[in-house]
Length: 503
Image: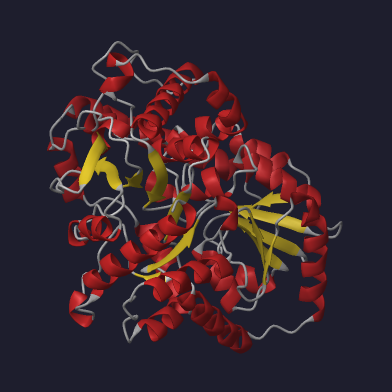
């Protein structure tokens, strides 16, 4: 296992790479970045199966970050700077919610602290203690390692990286993150701040600057057609079907059961408990489902699965899903109803809703809970519009049918055809009235929508980098320059950004 190296007092500035370049196929990214920025040290996270690089100083291993098993927290008796805590406090509630991802993690597959601390428990005190330990550690790394910038492989949403982001922001450390999101898989957006999501001008500006400073490799010749295929209705349907089928095979379940550390009895009890809780949640949902016919005027809202980046980060303004549904229902025009149904992916994840959730939703005025099995296409075609948080494949299906999509929260759908992004929550009633009137007066044209989607795909292509930082395509024979391209272009973009922000 990669072990954190002893902290040095090297005065040179450093860049912290939050799991950037950790795919074995992208191992060349770190030395390439070291070549472009020879006067800057590189810090990073150790990852299983990836060899140590002489160009990268490991400050923590991926096994340590989940439960905050950072030995320096005890050996150096770290604590949270009160002035820093005051700056982070406005985000404390959101960060505590994000510990849900830790609570759902298999804690037997990660390191537990070797120093005196209570075993992690999914309680307020358990979440709070873990949050404070994470804040103290990442602040210590930033200060002692003279971190002048942070670059993240992905949208900060795994709790530990969200804490790192909050600390860096509070310390006014420049932060750059890449974002890969459907429908454009194998395309990377790049942003400095979460609220910039969807601003293609910012992405394009940075890519142009990198192309001017360096020699960026051109896209694969088939990328244009590939991205146009990604916005078709068939692509949306394929992704939704894959989500519904997303479950472990019997062989994989057995393999996970016997993989060390085994704890077979515990894993069996946990699996049985989750299945029981999921079945109970389904029964509570069934009790509130309304069997009456679909109303004449309605908006459709399909929930997101629990604990994902959309709910926790992109839907930051809602403390919980019930609050979002209540806000939308309260903002509806007088003659409209909100149809709500469970996520198509929720059942495969075995993540039951809390006990009173469905009863609370069904009690909201103008809200009608419907069964999951109703045909999506028919529901969309008869609806006034779809309400979406962030993004889902259902949103792409709606746009293909020329059905308006009202988008809440952070999203990359700015500029997508027939999408209405709500940037201020107070404007939602006006947006819903506008969409209702549009649906009642306009004739929908899927053919026109497809042309507009292809144009959006072309615009997005110019504002993104080809490739993925979290996975590698299997059919590299179609694009033999894939790994070289992403290593070269990502490194040059990061170096360009660093030079402009830090010097």
